[in-house]
Image 1 (cartoon, rainbow, N blue to C red):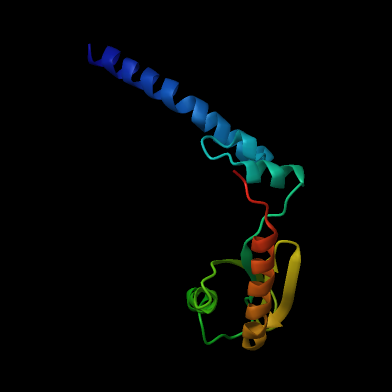
Image 2: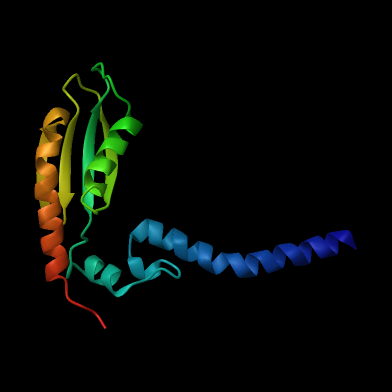
Length: 145
């Protein structure tokens, strides 16, 4: 009797979870936003078709492994976050590890625009430029109703 109840429970779970799981796997393989379950937007489709540009500020940090540093990735990400938050703008930080003795560098990307690479001690110089470009994208974005 207990085995039968377990089989029914497993069948119910599969019927409920299998469609969403299949769609997530399809999205991960193709990166087509129309396949992402319950998260599709008009902007995602336009970006996928190449009709629009994803507008966010991304800080790409080239984190070198053979150079001594006086800060951690977490500390650097927090400094970057605070620099943009002071202007009321969000930023996403992405670390890319490089087997090099070069200094740590950062490149800000806003849509198709890139600022950098810059050494960390000069990274603050491009924050205002990145924010200005981000705000221009926001002003030129069509209003959807």
